[in-house]
Image (cartoon, rainbow, N blue to C red):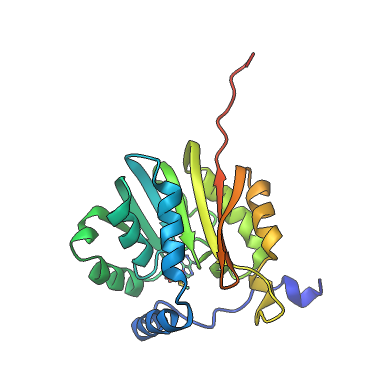
Length: 214
Ligand SMILES: C[S@@+](CC[C@H](N)C(=O)[O-])C[C@H]1O[C@@H](n2cnc3c(N)ncnc32)[C@H](O)[C@@H]1O
């Protein structure tokens, strides 16, 4: 790795700008037609669990939230995003379901982001973890997320991985490094649940601590 590779990648798309946020939604609908299959894979991974307290990191326009709230047994849903503009779009997209969502405006690049959020049976994140602006921040993000999970709770993490065409390699771990990042962050039973469009959905479980003598 060169010295430059260690630098955070400057933010080029500012999702706090309402016009940029709206343009991203339309652009993504056209460029990433496979996203509904990721939504389905998230829901399938959550389907055997009930009364879930869920935290979404980088929740954006609420598309994943709408699918999960519509298809899974959700007790509470916290949508965390740095952009008030995205939260506003999400509220519009969710309609009546928005009343079941607690929108939190917070920056997950700040180490204290987990403070006072509560605990969750599941943490989900789609196409957002790279917004830490460097892949070396992935393990710390996932470690901090794990502090909010109940024992046996799961993390569902999906994002793009490195390919020869990747424009900003500092943002995209190799596919096997995505799974390794979960392991390094302390998750167990790591599985790749979906893989399409140079993006993988990974599931990891927060270990259940064994008592003495077990
Ligand atoms: C590419 S969009 C993906 C949105 C959503 N997860 C989806 O797939 O529909 C990235 C999202 O991450 C949010 N984001 C960017 N930097 C963030 C940060 N430092 N903390 C929290 N959210 C952030 C953006 O506002 C945006 O909503």
